[in-house]
Length: 174
Picture (cartoon, rainbow, N blue to C red):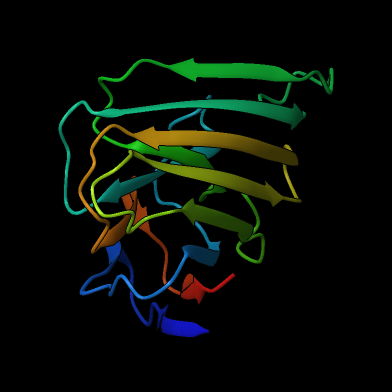
């Protein structure tokens, strides 16, 4: 069931879905976005996820990246692992201003057991990819090391998000 959709009519620093009820089994965030961050080798911006506004170092994540991620012409895969001090879980890499303006990144993030009555930490799985300059696919998983129910989800990139980015949050029942 679609909970909420946000379409950016203007550039924005981030997008937040708040007041999320605990009435679903899982959440799914579908997105189409461009980043204003030219972070990774200048080719992509980091897509970051925060739960409940928590920017402390209680996240960890792991990812596999395939394609031509840094423009080396090698089409080699990379593995990325981050320690739990980042203040966010990375959910992929987004097209940025070095890409054609029509090249938006698409992605799906599953947020599993987000309202589990304080019994366990929240995990997420992400699948993100884009075409154009340095096409790539990103498959990752993340962990929010906190047993609070997730009541808000924020998507951000260091330089912000371009106008035209769109996000829809779904509630999934099993």
